[in-house]
Length: 157
Image 1 (cartoon, rainbow, N blue to C red):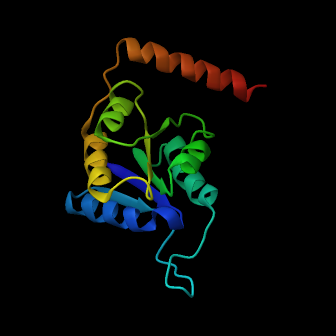
Image 2 (tube, rainbow, N blue to C red; image 1 turned 135 degrees about the vertical axis):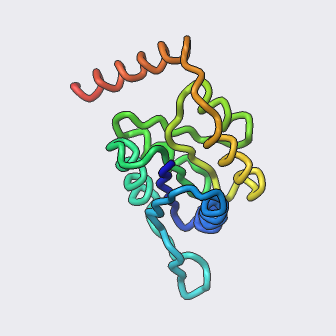
């Protein structure tokens, strides 16, 4: 499995923890930033989340990776950016249950997490559950097909 991961300054610390976890599991990771850039105060330098959210979402949309993980302060900005790309279903999750359901019922292909609002252990648990949970299909596929139709219609407006 090939996973793209990206973050802004608010998600850098958590992203680094997720990378360690995925590396320990042998997952192929494409790290799309931001890196360990520091301001003069010793904190990560401020960067714009749309730049990194777009890199990951573009890779998922183009089929260059199997899925993506995005981390910013709340996860909100990253999820908004990612969902602008065709075929992307980015889900902002807060716990193991929402992570599991985003895969089972929505076939989410990007997991968005808030680095400032989600504890490290909760987030790492979410990542493991999200990556290992299959899509159920069935009645949920019908709903995803409707989302796809809406996406196609909105692109032609």
